[in-house]
Image (cartoon, rainbow, N blue to C red; front, side, top):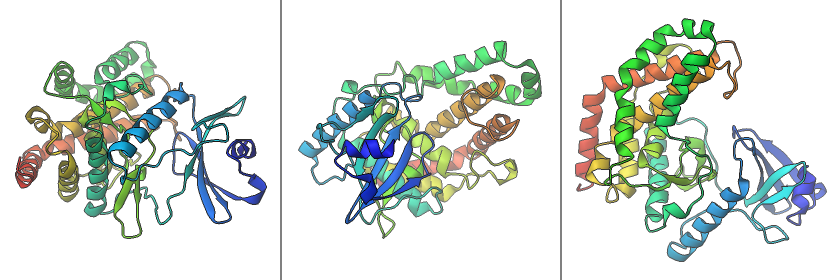
Length: 356
């Protein structure tokens, strides 16, 4: 399979050292070193991304725009195959693309300092800012309704009606807790009709591993562009809050380890506003803290719905894995809300620092 894919790019696998990379959760990725040249080969998971050529089209459109308007920006786009294609389809083997390996770059999987959080937020903000003149509506939607909270809530309600009754009974305490946060859904429904809240080119998957760092630990580029599509800024900022703020990730069973780190929150806000401060409307500025509430709440109901549906979407490693994940995210949401006064003060400080 790998050999056949590499041939499409004019590379002989027997002359290369090929190493699997395990950081990605969806696509399969290999590092390919051939003499002095190093590449990243990736197979797209077309069970998740139903139309891979739409992804390729999005990346190509963005690449053309950035080359024209910001040629110095490091945008890691796929290399062309011998047939002048950025994406290769092999019958019965899947969809493949080849990227150049950026020498002197590396990724990290866990945010371990506010400085890293700042660098990531700066890079994701810069990405959207540089594309402010790009017509977001011209992009393909690679995962329909990916961050559509209205739909996710409807799916959750359906799981309550048709899901595993024993699991629903087990999770009654979490069901009751989620009822207290339906105002998050109400705000989202208002966002969708508010003309002051814009749709932009958003990344939609802003975990730290989707940023390239250089040897000086400075962010240099964003990667993994499969979910780049039109969306609201709350998706990117919210996902950073969900994945950077607590030292405990979504798999942690000991909820006492879940906390909101104020310095990481400030780093996210400062980094993002450094590029997006002038872009955000006043209505959007008021939604900065909401961003975290939005994504965390949505992830909680998605985990719980999947638990009720007998774990048909998220991979699990033990019986109540999705139940624990849902409880974990509800705890994270509660911790975020407990600090809302302090966190909103931090937001106001950073807005003032940007002259906003």
